[in-house]
Image (cartoon, rainbow, N blue to C red):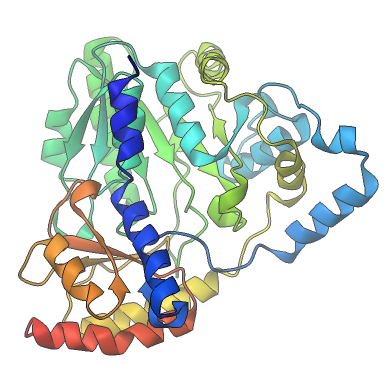
Length: 396
């Protein structure tokens, strides 16, 4: 018999992917310019110029074996050193390259990290709203997922419920800031309060509760917003990172895990990461992209383009009467469903060729996610449809 759990996952795409595939089909029927697809977080801003220049230079100067050959299992040392240098800038102290494990993007980083930590009976706590695949990653590693609801529109966790969620079986907490799907950033006060709870609970247990920082959006912030270096607030933190958004390379699947030297038993923890990568087959991340990362880790895309899109869509929808969470980062807008279920609202939006994602799979009900990492004309083209939606629901 085949694995029934894997069969179920394979036969049912995520809600995000379902809507994306619907959008592709609809575009083939009526033309892509007539479909306003806000489903997928696929960066619309080109990669920094240096990325393509580096690829061209590597192809020109390296022979095929050197370019495409295996690296060491945890990654090419130049790529690890570049990642460590970026983390060192954030930390304010030296992070050795030996603390970095190169991966096939953030999904692999999270999967490896969870498998390095989880034992039978363990629990993983997530803060709603959360990326739906966290459930898949945690449960496949053998953990039970425990959800903490947000406190109002700030999308900060309800701290009383957070403390209650951390129990004897809690092995890890996943935080995602800036957040997918809300665009909210966990404040320094929130993170300090969480750290105090985790330190107390870890002391009671006699073993660490780990904080896993899922940080693919950390450079995509607006105004004065900043994402703190989490191990500086709570030492038993593990950073999972991807260049998908910071270098606009989502399809190239390149990222890393950073186990900070301040973590308890950091050497053994990193060895467990290496062991989990080996067991899962996640060794030797894509060689060419590691070489690109080694040269381009400090480059950034034009974040101002996302800010402009945010300002257009947030300003227009709030003016129409929609209730939206104000995003400080990433490229998502979380919009409260007016009067009906999120799924019903999304179906109504389809009548105007607007494709949104209902929030149910994100761990909260009553919202929809809108990805504004699209062409500006897509946003402007959708506004008349949103006006009709606002009129239908009697907003303003």
